[in-house]
Length: 287
Image (cartoon, rainbow, N blue to C red; front, side):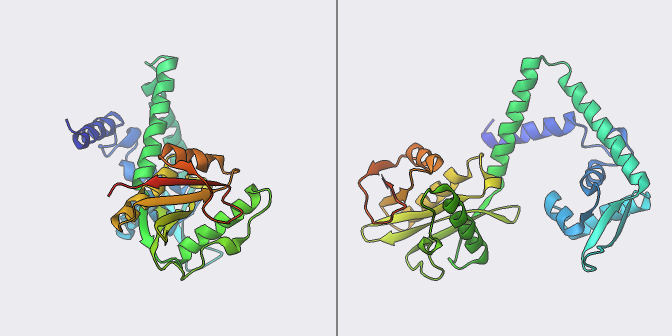
């Protein structure tokens, strides 16, 4: 099987094995969608958060809530803090049902793990962690945006604050690329579930292009997003005819230095006067 068919085959096995295809998930009298919504509502959640977290459209979420409301498990009403925001809350019966769901779920997973040895259970948990990280990476969207986009400016502000904490000498935010000044280059913005989680840009500088401000939010680190942003910046630059990329970084940014070296950048003499570019790197691009 090719890779697509292997993923589809795994999905079919996994959904059947966990029993998510029936309308009595974990032995309760409701399908997975309603059961998951009970879990996510918890102590209360606004409908916008539920839609985003579960990836549901408004119509389908409304139908699920009506069904759970008809069963006496959920109520929906305005937020005490903001009447424009609608909040879903579990009733007392809903809380009992959620507790029962939680117990059944733990029993189901315990039964799944039971036949495995301790070492095999560790292997399974590790494999699930890898799958989760890769799925997160695949789900992130990376788009070219104007350099004055509010989301990307928010990322750059957070980037500057982090550098100010990490650099012994501090960091002057005036060194950030100013909005409206990126005439020859591309600004990329990464979003996860609609939230901005990273950015980076390349800018033409004479006979080469320079990568600047490659940053990933702490909440999105550890699953390869920095490497993906760097790769997409390289691909975009190459598509615009760039053959040589350079970048400078600070010796305090050990993770970034390791990333650049893994990506094939070689250290070169300093090419600019920035006090923050204590190490300089270069990479040739194949068109």
